[in-house]
Image (tube, rainbow, N blue to C red; front, side):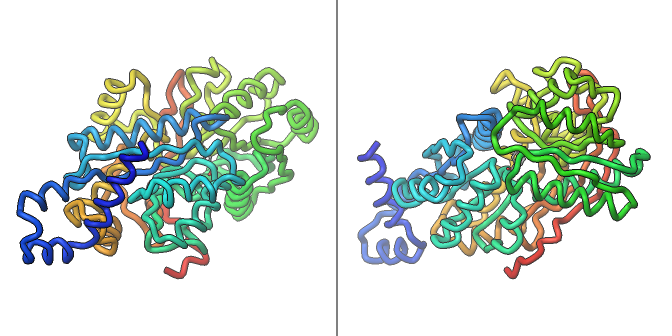
Length: 402
Ligand code: PHB
């Protein structure tokens, strides 16, 4: 491993810019075969994702999706084979700068792919901005990443925390609900999703009567469910994901609230969990930039390939990982695999129209997807698409100066 790293690093240094190669060829140092060999040096891809804790299924789905996009391109991106460097970030924001540095300084990766947890992403953003390494974020919605912390080398293939719950606010009001309670983990993602829901819901004339929080990643929901029962709002909106979502949905039913107070959420609440929650989620409506039953050529092909490769149904997280691979491919194709040409790569990524299973999307100026948000309903084991809740929704990118 160590030896391998050393070799990779030397090659990378050597590859910096086509000019060096041209000069070396002119000087007779490199034969054309030498150039071909040098250009085949493996691309060093860092995966920083949660592989332990409540968000583990998300980290795994993103990894699977990314690798599927690579496999579909014959195991190469921009003509180069891939060498993976993997860090389990444990969804722990305190370790985020150190973990990001492991990939950038120790492993000398060409590009960082990660992560799931918004708090961890905020820690990554600082290091990535300082080093200028290209970062593709395949999930974490922290608004700041494509807001005040936006930068030419920072890209996201998922969503901003603002996007899905902004669309949800209108839906919940349209259902005739005048009051709502929002419940979530207390950290950036939960707070930001709550805030955009409140904005949209109250703009339509609703009232968010209570915000309920518990520390991440705790799942002792009982006391808060008792509080909800005593408040008796017209609707409850929840953001939990992964293992916590499974437990919340089951506890909501066990507390006798299902059928009494309708439960809504951004679709993270019900994606990837339906096999595990039995009938506890049946009928729930959510908003998300992906859904089951989209019935497009691209989505059908993606689902077939994913099931074949992993014997698992894909979810939104798998799609976001897949699209991170597709976006990176667009960047590398633009520079024929020469990562030394960072400006060219960034240009290629900015101009890309990603043929995503969710529907084709482009990136905003702040490098966040401009995308349709679907209204979905849980029917059996599916988050069935019902309609488009918001067409081509762009994050407002407040504070982005890039
Ligand atoms: C986040 O922390 O940004 C986050 C985590 C899990 C999700 C969505 C957003 O499903």
